[in-house]
Amino acid sequence: MKDNKLAILTNGFIKENPVLVLVLGTCPTLAVSTQAINGLGMGLSTTVVLIFSNIFISSLKRVIPDKVRIPCYIVVIATFVTIVQLLLKAYFPDLDRALGIYIPLIVVNCIILGRAEMFANKNSVVDSALDGVGMGIGFTLALTAMACVRELIGSGSLFGISLTAHLIDPMAIFVLAPGGFFTFGVMIALVNKITRGKVRDKQKQGCAGCAQAAACGQAEEGGCQS
Image (cartoon, rainbow, N blue to C red):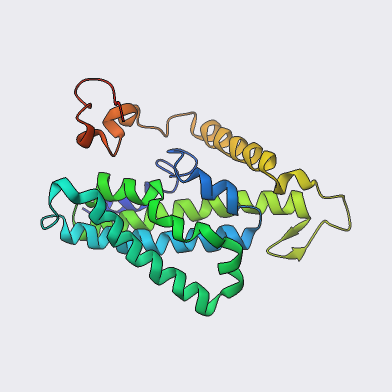
């Protein structure tokens, strides 16, 4: 039992890392990872929403009608996103301004909707909470690591502290879109190299692993049309 709980908690770190393995949440990952503090703030905000939305959705899974489950998930997620955004505005206004529109866009983040549909909707409250913690930590680690690389090379600083700006000329392209895609690709390649490409569960690819497979009715027909 303990081993199972530990596996659920640690799946999101590497094996099913939402950013570097499942390649979800790419838009906020590329957009806010220009500075380490932004990556950390976005990761922690998403983690809080993940944990509480998983808990509530798992608790209400027997109450929510199957036909309207996705709209219900969005309402639950939007509630916690609003709470997080108001807390950021009250206590971390600079971070709130830096993250901007990407905080409210957590509502439609594929990571959160995906875990709600694929995990919280089918598992117990405790397991769903552990899944939210694990996926949130994995997302935060990936986002922060990517942001640290981009800030250090692109601005010569880390968490706003100048480190190499006076020693070498920063490569400003790393804080622009091309640098984001390059860093993202290199980190995915490193994860595949370290794990020898075995982190992906091949059976979860395609329609079988799609959150909308049940809704579109294509899982058994071999092709999703949505």
